[in-house]
Length: 291
Length: 273
Image (cartoon, rainbow over all chains, first blue to last red; front, side):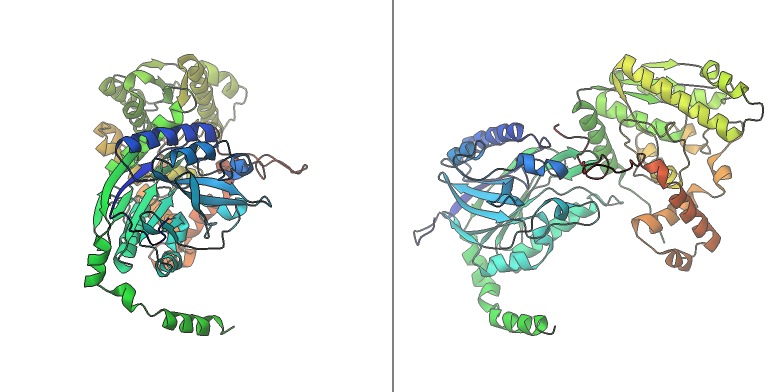
């Protein structure tokens, strides 16, 4: 936890764009432990896995059977929490609450503890997506302190909406960790699929507008006819792309973040300083009270 | 106006990855394919070769006695160029007894029988070669229902079902499908002189553009007409799409219980893999 201590100024960040076995949590846990070992050997400080990395994505009626609780007596999380003594982890899973509601979730694990769990707040239920049929909607967007500074996590559709990254920014997040299970779609004459171009564009835009680090980790592999396209990215507070993983194949993509870049970028471009939150609130109050 | 150009490198990468993933994850390493001599099966075959290796693909030529020599020769071009294990089985002896039962049998019925006998031969060889049957239906024919249910539509996986015919042709060029196969008029070759475009009454070039607006871009019929498409043509195509929805679905099951296959028993085919 930050707790006013001087935080690390360098962060070795790795993004594990893995393929998963649909509904086979044990097999997926094994893959996580393999990537964790590899990342540890590379002296990774923080390793991010994609959305639903422990379960696979199109779960449908498998949801209840793959749910876990991020506690140290859970047969899956006990291994991950143990591993988090060596490096911080973000993993994707199905979270079941005490009243048996199931959420698409990301957990941030560090030093054997769960620092934060984010429940996906926007469940796409249109086109090829049917998440709202199978999952409960998350209802909070919070940043949280880590040994690298304040962090925010979002899952896929969450950052297709502008408000969640904006709220994380105002809540103090300087490092945004986005995870996805994004199916490739929109083939045309261009070199990239529409879905990849869109996500890369908004990731870069958030890094630029919020003068923050924005990392995106998307899974790979097929589920029936859906191909998840990978292409992990990290953008710095100037909106510059620092690193990009390959499309369509598993990879561990790593980059050393110089966290002092936050200071330099914001000295040059004080968008955070000048953000008029009271004005936002006043106008939102007016807009929402129209009835 | 409508540009159906695709990046064929991206398409090839995705579709070979799809074949490799979906064949191997169920414990297979091989594929079988009915190589008709036409464009679509040539594309699926070359994609399978590029995904799995030629030695892991088994190409079947399944001529009927009225099939054109061109069809056989063109299938052979693919087999020779890519060095694919293959077999030729004349289906006449299987088809004719059924056809002969009715002297008034229509071309449509004959064609359907041939397509379904080919399906039987394909699935039989699937067991012999231990390979999954690879589909050869493109998006245009699936939408128009221009195919035989449980016949040429039958397959384990279909790599080209999201490519319109004109896009499939672009992909064919990029993966070295021999020119005679790309350049000839598309035909199911179920009877002499049959061509798709004569039978359908419009060209693939026209209908693909219309389908792209209607299906991919969600244009209304009126908006398509405003884009310059003939009103009768638009109506005819929409009717065809609607009437052939049954070919794109598993048969509906009448619901009785609280949990019914097809409605609320929902798992992907890749469940557990």
